[in-house]
Amino acid sequence: MAGTVQTGDATTDRQRAREQRGIRSTQRAKAEGNRLPAPPRQRRPALAALAVLLIVGGAAVAALLALRVDERVAVIQAGGTIEAGEQITQAHLTTTRVAAESELLIPESQMHDLIGRYASTRINQGQLIDSTMTNASGAMSGGGVAVGASLANGFVPASGLYAGDVVDLVSIASGQGETIVEDARVSSADFADSGETTAAGVTATFIVDREDSAAVANVAATNQLVVVLVERGVPFEGENGGGQNGGGQDNGQNEGE
Amino acid sequence: MLIAFASAKGSPGVTTTVNALGGIWPSDVVIADFDPAGGDLALRHRGVEGEPLDNERGLLSLAAAARRGGAGEGDLGEHVQTAAGGLDIIAGVTRPEQFTGIGAAWPSVASMLAGASTDVLVDCGRIVPGTPLLPVLTAADAVVFVARPGVEYYAHLRERLRWLVEPLHVGEAGSIPLGVALLTGSSDTSAPRDLDRLLQHDGHQVTVLGRVAEDHKAAGALAGRWSRRIDRSLLVRSARELAESVRALATVRTRTTARS
Image 1 (cartoon, each protein chain N blue to C red):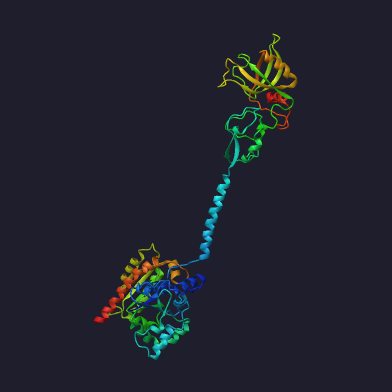
Image 2: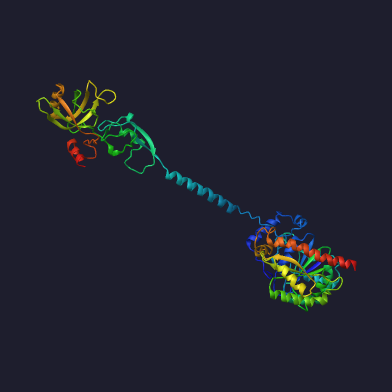
């Protein structure tokens, strides 16, 4: 312990400079019987500023990361159930905020592009709508025409008809059932309140090829049209929907899957 | 009150002990660095203004004044330098050969210190027979040896005490009381008691005053190597206890001489 030489390093010099400025009074120290070296009172503003900067910077980076991790965007959601083939209106749509990476979801800003398109498939209430679920042309494209028919009870399935259903139209005019249109689409079906068939029956609109339309109109007018439900909930493929071809062919594909 | 601190052999920490005692001494005190091998205090400390202490002002100027015989007793002022923190220091020599030059002035120096108005703690360094510091020892109110625990330290301490019996008139009425302070680790509580038994068994009239804690960090701070708060360190706390017993030991002598 003896024989050590003091090294006048910068810290000690600084400390002494502070003592010199009167931080500690020599006279008072003597009176207290305490002549020990003054405890360090090192002030380093630059270091303190750096510390504060690091703390604030770290907090800012952490906050930024937290916000980035949970970045949500408004996308379009079905506000009500949209049947396959139904034209989409403003009333069908609502928005919700989700954290999404998918390119398929449609942001809120493109809602006006979506209105007027047709649902390719049945879209349930609350489902997020993506760009594969709609097509531009709907059922009427590709030579299809709409034929209305009023159908009595017993001529339609007991479960009723819904827009988008794939049906066969069968004529009973000849006494034997004869399928006059295969795989027609129900464009709309109007039945009384709760989806139950009533005594008045169902008024439905079918999309059929133009050459079949006269035959369908004929049997429909004479109450000789029976509707056979083939499929329900099959995505509706328009001419422009995903570059695929018309109804019958696609239905065949879907059945095969 | 003049108290001399010394070591029998080696460097047990006399300078640090004197420095720590000076730091907490309850009354006005000057610490003097009379180590024959060269002083440390002037190198360890700096002045109040941050300037290095003056080597010439201290033991050398004191000896010169004593040789001239001009300086009156109690007038240490011009040889004392105040270090940062408020500790009054009489700086030692820088080279051992300066020490031999003081020679015949030692008795005068000793009497000047003994007659000083403040308490004086003298670091005498290592004491061997033939030491020029003998006048200081004989003028002191108490002589305190600092030692470390260990058979070899005890052996050398015993020999030195035996040698001092004659010059200090140990055993006679009004003799200079001898004390020992042990520099031990904080866990070693039995060493002072063991040493006391050993010395009593040998028939030495020596008081084991207590212990100085071995506290390198506080010692480093005391020597200016580090900046840290040490007023609650083991070293300073042990020094406070030791200061009381050292003062008590020296007071015995003062009282006895006053009576005789």
